[in-house]
Length: 161
Image (cartoon, rainbow, N blue to C red; front, side):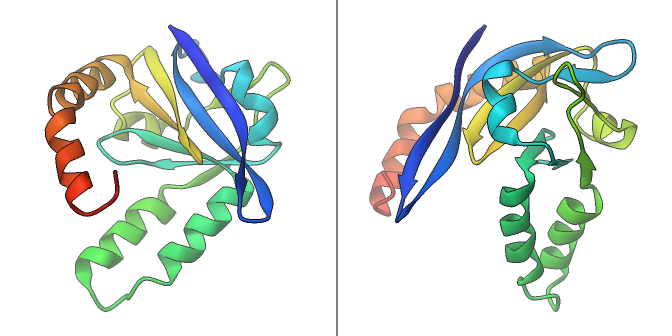
C-alpha cells in the first residue's frame, strides 16, 4: 500500500500543499516512524504532532498548525465541551522533527492515545497527515465505506457535495 503524496493547489492568490494517499509503515524499536518520502519535503523542518479524532494522530506542518491553533484559541472558553476539545488538541501537541532518515519519534502519551502498536497507516488528509494503528484504520475505513452513499446524500443536502 502506498499511493498519493502531496500536490500544490491554488487557494485564492497563493499556492498551498494538499496531502493525499494512504501508506503502511511500522514503528521501529526506538518508537520512530518513517514518514513517507512523498510527504517529507512539504512538511518542512518543523512539524507538530497532536491527538486527532477517532483515536488517530494528526501531523501538521508548523505553518498549518499555527492556523489551527489560532482557530482553536478563538473558540469560546465559557463552554465546557469547547474547553475540553481545545485542551485535548493543544495540550497533547508536541513539536517534533524529522531526523536525517525522515523518521519522527512518537511520544508515548500520543502512541497510547492512538492505541498504536507496531504497524500504522499514514493518510494524507488535505492539510495534515493522520497516523492510525493499522487495525483501527481498517475498522474505521470499512465503516466509512459502508456508509459512504448515505453520507454523500447528507452532504449533498447541505450543498457540501
